[in-house]
Image (cartoon, rainbow, N blue to C red; front, side, top):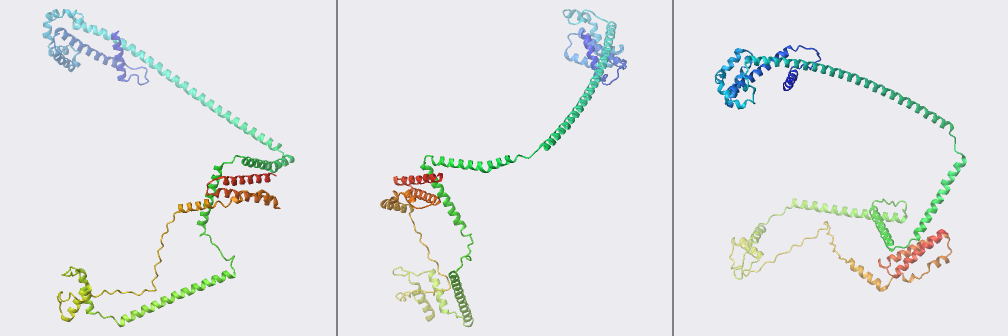
Amino acid sequence: MRSKTTVRNLVNKIADQEGLFSHDTEEMDLKPLIRKWRGTFMKDEIKNYALNHLYVTDPTMNKKDLQRNLKILNDNIDVMGTTDGFQKIEKQIGLDDKILQKSSTVSALKPMKDLDPFLEKKETYEQKKQKLDEERDRQLAQVEDLMKKRREKMTKLRQKQELQKLEQEEEEEKTNHEQKVKELEEKIQNIEAERKRKIEEMNANTKKIEKPHFRKIQKNYTDKVLMPNLEQKKKKLAMIRDMHKPIDMDEIFEHKKKMDEIAEKHRKEFEMNRPKDDFTYKKYETNWLKNVKEYEYQNKEETEKKEGDKKELYEKMRSYGDMVKEMHWPTVSKKKQLEMQLLKQSLNHPIKNRLNGSTLSSNAGNRRSTENLLSHGGFQSDREDEHSNTVKRRKIIWKENPMVPKPKPKKTAQVVDWLLERRKARDEQDRDGPTYKKDIVNDWKKDIEKANLNQKEKYEQLEEEARRKEEMAVLGQGGAMDDNDKLLIFESIKAKLSLMEEFNS
């Protein structure tokens, strides 16, 4: 069983290496392949026989000697098929010496008779060769049988693949045919649906008639009469519901706050847009306005004339001064020049009095020094001039230039305590009492009924009275609520209710 498996594996290996079944040829010559396999198999058998024979003759052979002998066998593997070649290898590995000592070696290896068949029976080379030939023939027959089965298997596989390919092509052709049939059916259905739609549209156009006249009248009456009346009733009911809601003081104050914010916003917008508005006086131009414009024009001309005269006078003065400077150029006084130099030096180095250590007057020292230099050509001692009088410093007063504009007076900041003023005003108001308390008991409803007014005038009067009461209630105490303020708010609410009653009636 083992040899059969070995032969099958060897056949598969050789077939894969040679590519026997890679093409479609069913018949091929196996003799070269069998010859090649036979030589390889015989060489392996000879090498195994030689190694076994060496091991039987010398079981004490070490690993190094075994590797050396194996290398010799591999190098001479090509000449093992001949008798001379085998004898040559036996001489190289010393097989003759081992055969001479056969009797002692076999007796020493008796316990190992189960390990190898060479220990029980010595076979000659001819017997081994005959046995190998028989085994080789048997294996060659197996190889031929396996190769034949392999060819048959490949033939069946190729036929099966061709059959599958034909079936696949047939299936694809069938699928394409069904797809074309389906597309044709869909196209026919679309054409039929389009034809039906056109027929229905034609029937609808032929049967179409105008609506009856009474339907139009009914629709116009509903849109123009019933719906507006219904909307008015809804608004009226919503207003009544709002009027019958409980009064919330927070909502009233919140509404007041919003109105104040809106008024402040409009005031700021008006102030911002006010300079941008171009106001024309041509519409309202009168004789008085013409006189005012003429007076302003005359004043403007007089002012411009005065300014022109001033400029002309200034130019004359400047030109006269330039002419005088050119004709009479001022001379430089050596005395004054020397005095100025000494004055500058004395300012840089002041002289102290030797007696009391006080600084002498700069003008006095300069004057003495100048007089001494001019009269005697030298300086006198300080001791001689200690008790001389000091010269007072002159103060130069310049004339005011009328052409230079005078500086504007500085504005002094006035600090105003706004909270303190508000407290004082509130204390005075608490002391004097509110101004509207006398009008609380005023029966405004009777006054309106006594007056001969029509419905519209009564409506306007009631609305004005309600607004006035509400403003007096909120602004009476600067936001603080008391009984009188609440009474005024109640009066304003009564005025609104009466206004709603008048409107409903």
